[in-house]
Length: 302
Length: 110
Image 1 (cartoon, chains in turn brown, green):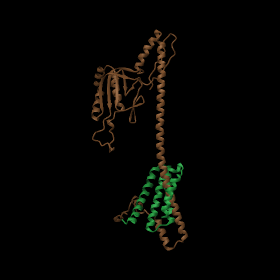
Image 2 (cartoon, chains in turn red, blue):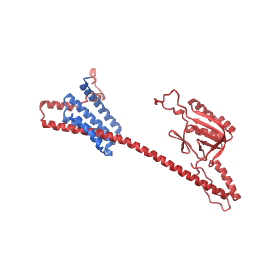
Image 3 (cartoon, rainbow over the protein chains, first blue to last red):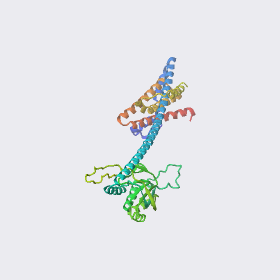
Image 4 (cartoon, each protein chain N blue to C red):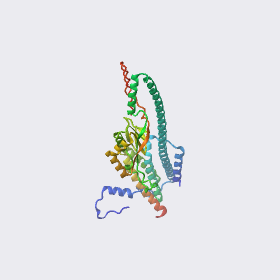
């Protein structure tokens, strides 16, 4: 296929190997067999045997092709089935978990009301109850309502001149809200004196984590999606003033402006934040003989 | 004509009876198919060249499939199975293309 090099310079082994591969596409044995055949004739019986062998070989080749095709198709199908089974498993288990959580909530409501009834009878109990109410407020164990600030963070809109059909352009990762951005905003809100904070209706307790898992932001291990609405309860004017004055927030505003992220805030007269996930009982002490309050200090589960 | 009928019969048999292949053999199926294709194209070209020989065809078919499988098996044992598969596919692919080009020249005279 390629002309031999001029000048007779020694050729590298690699080049001759490639030449051999490219030039000798036909098994040389065929030519040798044809040469051998030219000298003497093969008997008719042997010719028929040869034909039968060739047919058998072709049957095997066909079998090989179809079996391989079947195997590959079955593999793809099996993967699809496994995927669907896993998805339905996930759905079932998360609905079961939701049920259990609802049950837990009902039961702990019952416990709370019974406890409140019992404690309300004595002055010591009353004091303990007040203390508990303060602790619960601090640990985001009760829903709250009040005026506050609503901060909205959203991913950059896809550019208008991008062809949606082409599909080749990937979304710029810098145009996405990251966990760090949410953490920054939330920390700035706490620093500005927010009494309670929630992201997309997920109340933040003392142990709530804001994390990134793959492409999704998790708040308290539950995914929240774009746009992110961060509600903070507190005096709207003080909150807004201190929040906007903090250098981190200004830096974030500049970054948002550069990459097209949406970053808005508005004062709200009434915001309602739900309770954080039902707190786990972690520490309990037996009641002191002197009549001390039972130290059932619930901490929100993490 | 008979070989083509044989090929069709093989494909039909495989699709109809859907034989199960043992799991340890499954990774070698695709490479075996490529090797078989190489032998089949070689045989077809030899036939058009007028030098076809049944014995050479059968032996080249069997040895192609077995050697390709062995190379990949060896590669798997040495941890370079994927690379050796690529090597086998490249070499056999070049031969298939070369033979297909020769067949094309025979059939279309171009």
